[in-house]
Length: 340
Image (cartoon, rainbow, N blue to C red; front, side, top):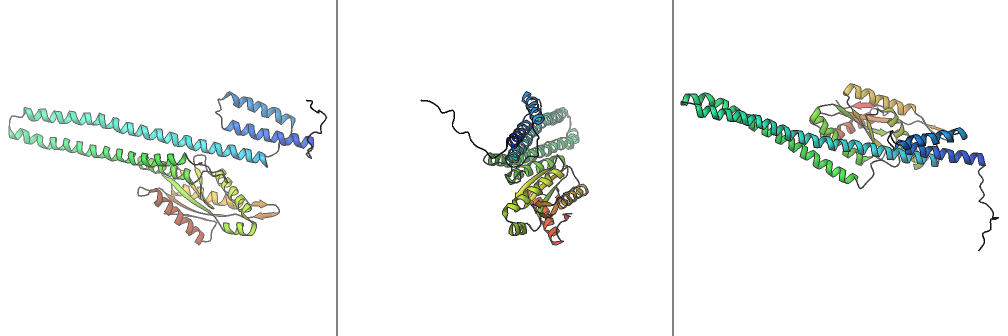
């Protein structure tokens, strides 16, 4: 059987130079994506950087679009999810260490209390009269009360650990069956938020370090869908998510809560600083016009915020921020209202 080597080659309408640039751009997107998922110490990182350098010398590289953009978004989602999972893993380790420390403290302190009570018993045994015993009574009762108080305190702490661990275990188990990154906007999703809020409320109760929760809602979002179609609506969602992600600090988190609503968690802030950061987000979204062909569409958001308090639960904190957001809507939209 012979092979006809003179058969017609595959024809392409893409000029050779343009085709080379297209392939080069896809390669660079792949190199960058793989590198950001690797440790900086990985030997492969340097090799990929060298390859990227070679490609760049031979062909003009333009900003990613089409398939190249999809490749970059895929790696962005992967990176976001891996980073979040690392944070949750660290939190689980911290909780395990806290439980171990509580038990260690219980053992060491109970030993000290036991020594004090033993000393009281010895003194009572040495007493020669009722008067001597009565003098030791208050000390003995005081030591017993210390044992009761300390035991109750540790039991309460261990019970708090148990409750938090149970909730977190349920969230982690649920997360194994679903992605933690929203496929449209490339930010963390509702499942990731449900996990994060458990961690942050636990840490606040233990360390008393304030943080803020912001609820963001795109103003008149239905109008974008109705006037321009759902594809434009999706692009508005991606644009807003990207602007917010680029505006917040590296220690903060953005989640797509549902529909056109997002949640931002601002770490280590008081009410004043949280209000400033929320205002910055609001103004940045307003300034970043969304361009669709010849149309220059103005997008704004309304933001409601709340600072965590001792009385807050997961639902009450969100409810306070959500109500503040609706108040911002009532006040005319495109503004920030903080619950105080």
